[in-house]
Image 1: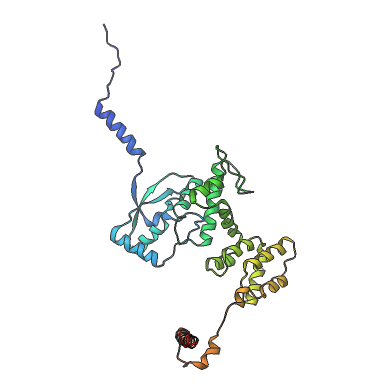
Image 2: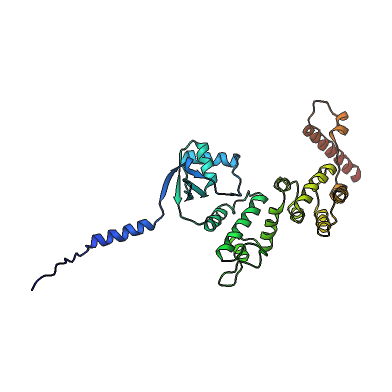
Amino acid sequence: MKSSGRKLSLTSYDEIFSTEESRADERREKVTEIPLSQLHPFRNHPFKVQDDERMADTAESIREYGVLVPAIVRPREEGGYEIVAGHRRKRGCEIAGLDTMPVIVRDLDDDAATIIMVDSNIQRETLLPSERAFAYKMKLDAMKRQAGRPSKGNYSQVGNNSLGTTSSELMAQQIGESKNQIFRFIRLTNLIPELLDMVDNRKIAFNPAVELSYLTQDEQTELLDAMDSEQATPSLSQAQRLKKFSQEGRLSIDVMRAIMSEEKKSDLDRVTLSSEKLSKYFPKSWTPAQMENQIIKLLESWYKRRQQMQER
């Protein structure tokens, strides 16, 4: 019997095992050292990377222990990599004098990258209102696009998944925030930069800021002038009235100044002693802090004497 012209080759057990192992290894994410010069910030990244005390601690930790958690990056079409998670770690490496940083490279589309970028930062305790506002907006828009729904319109009504849960409801579950509060933070993205900075610096409280976000851009700019001329920031009730006048089409600079010139209840309950009034009672070299300490001591002494008189 003639043998066929083809030879059958049997794969050995070792070859099969190594093939499976190599396939698993290919699927496993690898940590790679990438030069810092090739790492670029995420486009429209809402989180501020500041050289503060916390950053100094991060840099010191990196000097001593290295980067313990690799950053997540994705390839850029124009070359290099875009940081998805790890902006603070990159800055810490720069301060620590390192040239490279350990990263995990992932192929991510824009929406998946946005969600990871927000989730990796959103649980920080020191987030500014503006950071949280833009982060919430970016993640919710990305989640709605993933759900196959348009990003415009009523945030609470679009972006349903197959189980009938809206994107905003799912996001609320993920971050432990109420749906209403998410929308209120997103409202802050409608503020002009000057007003938003005042919210971050606690010159305008969160609740009044949400109301002011309903004013037009031009009205917000005029409000800055009214606040400056009256040397006051709006309370919640004042912000609500400004919003009402705006919605009625009756908000003018004169109306703004009239509202901002009102005395707030907190002002009526406050006792203010200017340095000018106090200066004649203290040496010229004394600082306001020294004056305050001395006044407190005198008040405590007066209070004790008053108590003694009442007990007689």
